[in-house]
Length: 135
Length: 92
Image 1 (cartoon, rainbow over the protein chains, first blue to last red):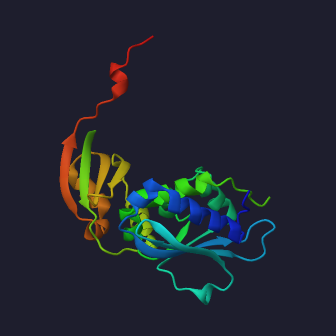
Image 2 (image 1 turned 90 degrees about the vertical axis):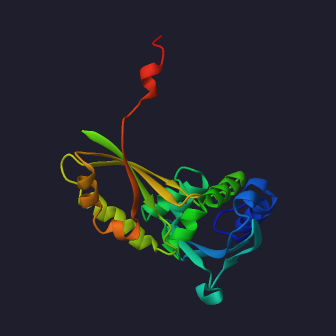
Image 3 (image 1 turned 60 degrees about the horizontal axis):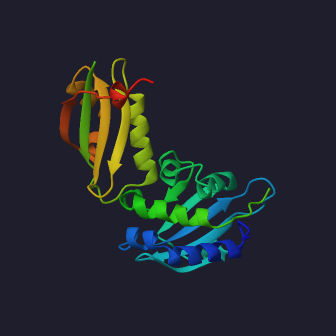
């Protein structure tokens, strides 16, 4: 079972995204990479940064980044662990999280809103991963 | 109280999360007694925002929207009648 906050989890997500026909269809015109930043909570001491490169319905690359300056993605989404856990387990709608600033976004919000179906399918892929969350 | 569907054009190419959330908060803060922003539905493929309002008249809604109109101009306002499917459900 992939552990959230480790590289194995984002690699598992990459595999799932690339197998998802609904995601491929919803994101066929999407061009843009992300940082998903998990800010420390509980036993975490440092933020965890996932880099995800999404391109025309596929995930070209996904890995854990140790230095935020390593990449300059178009979008950065930042939230504490508990919020990401709610998103990944579909207890919080990602768009609601963005519209209420529970998830902070750096980048063009209009572009995210126009591709809401792709965002929903991405979350759907997250739910396919049997995830072990840190306690 | 009259009910309205307000359709906004949301074709703005670029907006930050803070701009968008702050606009929504400004609208919520401008609500006066008798004017209620009930819900909004965003149609991403059409770039339209459909908002359900209860207000005495259209002018009260425009007044509440204030600065938001500059970013998301109104395309149409329809005075509507609320219909609830519960009215037609058979009672057991």
